[in-house]
Image 1 (cartoon, rainbow, N blue to C red):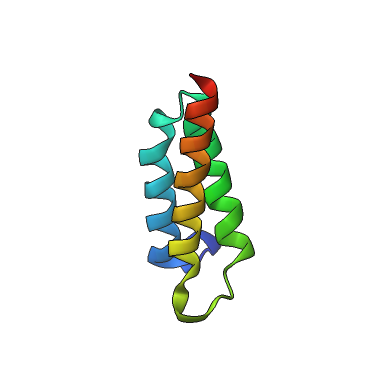
Image 2 (image 1 turned 90 degrees about the horizontal axis):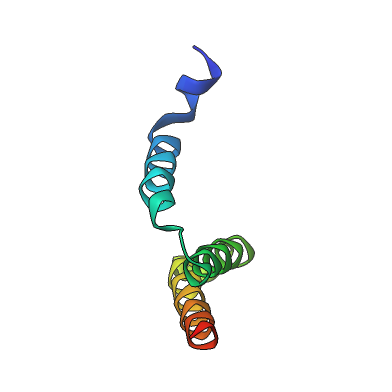
Length: 72
């Protein structure tokens, strides 16, 4: 068994999601949204009830909205 085949479907889903998102990263607010969401997800991964996903999505959306308002 190779290293890549041992990664499983979790890795494949992550890579697929990243590949789908990359074409949309053309503006500064969108890049800020993705970066803030990713960092927040990493920092809150130990939150109970898997609430880190909701926290990261909310933080990313708020950061994107602020970046868009200041960009206009």
